[in-house]
Length: 596
Ligand SMILES: Cc1cc2nc3c(=O)[nH]c(=O)nc-3n(C[C@H](O)[C@H](O)[C@H](O)COP(=O)(O)OP(=O)(O)OC[C@H]3O[C@@H](n4cnc5c(N)ncnc54)[C@H](O)[C@@H]3O)c2cc1C
Ligand SMILES: *[C@@H]1O[C@H](CO)[C@@H](O)[C@H](O)[C@H]1NC(C)=O
Ligand SMILES: *[C@@H]1O[C@H](CO)[C@@H](O)[C@H](O)[C@H]1NC(C)=O
Ligand SMILES: *[C@@H]1O[C@H](CO)[C@@H](O)[C@H](O)[C@H]1NC(C)=O
Ligand SMILES: *[C@@H]1O[C@H](CO)[C@@H](O)[C@H](O)[C@H]1NC(C)=O
Ligand SMILES: *[C@@H]1O[C@H](CO)[C@@H](O)[C@H](O)[C@H]1NC(C)=O
Image 1 (spheres, rainbow, N blue to C red):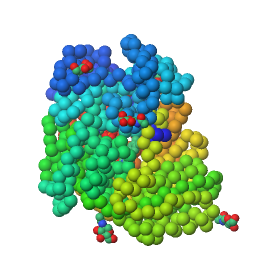
Image 2 (tube, helix red, strand yellow):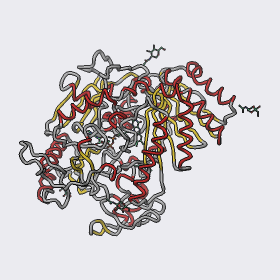
Image 3 (cartoon, protein in one colour):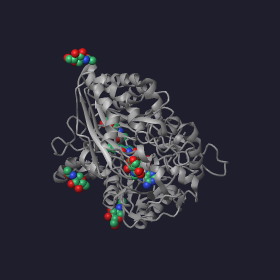
Image 4 (tube, rainbow, N blue to C red):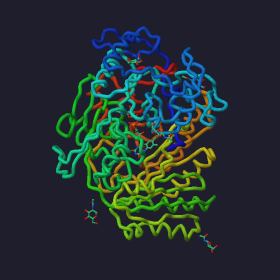
């Protein structure tokens, strides 16, 4: 979503009043010496040039110094001249192109997480900063080095190196994470995006009676790659809506929602085995029989924290017909919000029919593009949706719809109806989100819509909503949380909502902290207050969400996944903000990741 962004509250996450030393000398008598901070450039424990060269040889020359791509638009980077007008024009033209951004070594999809460092001037394409911003290019919050891995062995080398040298280690696939978990200061990045295997198999060995086939995909494969491979074979795979999100990384680590979720549940329900590199550097294949605890945790129980996923095997299904339509409400003032109220309070009727709707909303315009109704006829669809249109007419709300059509396969609907512009990168946006339960929409739907209006009015023109009417628990109940380690509210969801706050560019440190406060306290607070039985999708929320363990996983699931984290990564080689097991560490004011 192009408007969107979020950002680490460095200041809030910090306890900076102890000295950072590589070795913990406070308790020298324990048998296992615990380091209190990771090593950073300038520390005596930071690796030497020849150490890095050795690592580079081990990974076949695929280690790269993470120079910001926008450095070509500035005079110099770390004392080295970098300006190149032709390359700068290229970077400026690609900055918002998600398909370009996913291929970069370290930069995040949205700019607050890099401290908006070395941004090109996209308005002019000429060297120099965006209008009014600082004309220097520094590392900002970006990492130091990246391994552009092409095999599990490259990943093993990276994990061993980071563990032995006590470095902050970050796993980056596409950089989509709008919670800032795939980027960070002073780190070694393992970039998994080049693991692009896609292999179909019509048989499945350990599939609990699943008669369809499976597909094994490398961790770097994006949703659009998998769709492009599966659709010509007349196969559906439970996946997401955004073409450039990776599947095997953060998406499955958070569960994964998408257009067929009302029919098939969350994406991680469909994994049959996962290959992973552990903190020890060991390669392991986990499934429902071998290391089933880790297999379960990797399915929705946290991202970037248990190990590095190298490939995943997912169930495939024969395609089915899908009916779809788009709806646009354009009106103003009370009548617009009355239209939203009518729309929103009917949401549970749509999700009960297995329908999914992706929509964007700002004051005055709601764009539901599209409705996706798996295996429903036009008559069945109209029976569910006509009462909505009738009520909108009665209330004199101004709206338009497209013709209701049945497509032979989901792929035809996706190609015909999907609104793709929200998949842009490079925006200066701060994000929050909430997975709103059926109970809350049924009990207080009107209050929730009043909260949306209130949030819109707080910062006029700067707040945008992206919603998904979907209930992955519509048919797949998973009452005991055996299939996936996701928050139980996933199986009782009515609307999975994100909101985006876009302040003006070039903020000072204080203004950034204020932007985060607005998202967490003001905007987030307004929505929390009217949704007491709801939760937050661990992949699409506010990284500073208070009590994130409860909000993202809940009091039943979280203690279980935390135990699994401690079993497989007892020394915290992996750390990902507000992800499972991260509470023992915090980023201090000096940007160091240290034990608290
Ligand atoms: C425009 C947009 C649209 C989106 N649409 C959807 C959608 O339709 N459905 C949905 O469910 N979500 C959606 N998301 C959210 C998306 O699922 C998350 O941002 C997800 O974390 C992205 O995963 P990634 O691996 O592509 O990204 P990254 O940012 O590279 O990684 C995200 C997290 O996963 C970890 N990670 C990455 N690779 C690995 C690996 N191999 N092993 C272990 N950990 C790893 C990272 O360390 C980080 O913590 C969308 C996001 C955006 C920005
Ligand atoms: C790693 O080796 C490759 C190939 O020799 C080289 O191009 C690259 O610059 C090296 N990376 C680092 C960080 O030195
Ligand atoms: C976006 O980036 C991709 C990958 O680099 C490229 O193939 C495509 O042409 C780019 N699109 C535009 C409009 O430049
Ligand atoms: C982030 O940007 C602000 C504003 O330009 C600047 O004052 C601050 O030093 C930057 N921080 C880092 C770590 O680059
Ligand atoms: C679609 O629905 C029909 C009955 O309405 C059913 O027979 C069929 O199995 C369903 N298809 C799928 C893929 O579930
Ligand atoms: C809708 O408009 C009609 C005609 O202008 C009017 O008679 C009716 O009262 C209006 N209904 C509502 C709910 O405002």
